[in-house]
Image 1 (spheres, helix red, strand yellow):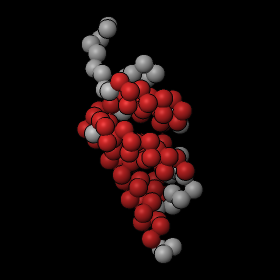
Image 2: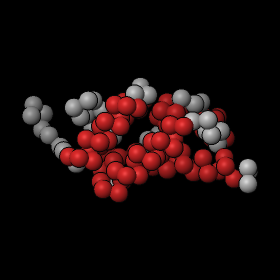
Image 3: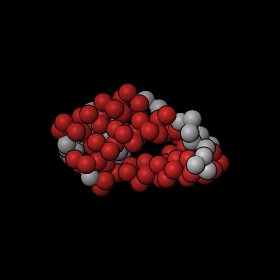
Length: 112
């Protein structure tokens, strides 16, 4: 059973990448791991992975994957959600997700 855990964690990392349309480099930054750790599945010490997936599962049911991938790179009131993740400002990212869940994905023209 212990042999399956790294595979599951690797699968979960791939799921996070897919949900947000992130590159491996971006995922490494978000989880604060080097590429070798990511590829070897040594992510069991990263609680952020489980927390982010739980948060995103709720919102992805409402918004859908395509909206999440677009939203994460769009500038919102608090900045770009992907930048929040890369700064590891998970509280700001959670707030942005709550705003997305409450208001939906709103596109504005420049200057609005």
